[in-house]
Length: 260
Image 1 (spheres, helix red, strand yellow):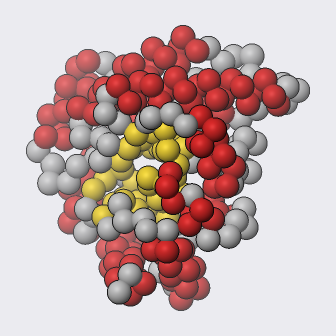
Image 2 (tube, rainbow, N blue to C red):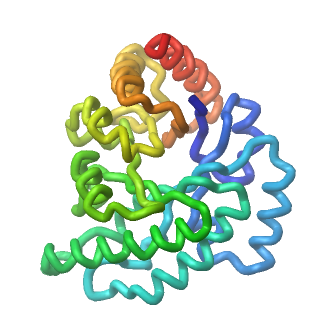
């Protein structure tokens, strides 16, 4: 199992020193609308790092809508065709499609129309991803962040119904806990599960105390039952990045215990 941390490019060396196997960067903030000169500089920085941005999140900025009257397939396609090749050039392999603001259904907009728009958007970005050797992993989000697809089970239905190369599934322990979704759902989702996020329920911090470690143990037990052995990213809010040092140690110890 590889453990990484969602962070900014300027923090990459520090994340490596804390024990991360990889880092997860933000697509929209770093490459989505960057100028060629800005991207060239990011390439220079990334080439010298001891840890690589294998995973990426926040596929879309909030102003690119994929549901509602402002959804524009041409804008989405143009954005994807610029951003995704850049992600690949920087060493990216998986891209998380969460982007709750982009996909949320506007009040009064027909739900079925929004669902059709969203499926088309997923298919479009999956095509660009597959053409660039990347995998989009769809992220179900808790209800305060979006009103469209909140459960891993719902995400699995989306992924399986599209059944398109380059479009798979993510399970996020925090969102699952917030929505009260049983962790054993990941066993059912196993064939399509290609990335995982973790954070403590409630606080979204690094899971460190006894209660948080117990929840992490339960989640890891189900991941192990699912046969998952790829990447897990800490997607946490913390005032002290040193928390990650202990968090990585705890996570590795728990994973070693449940997989023994």
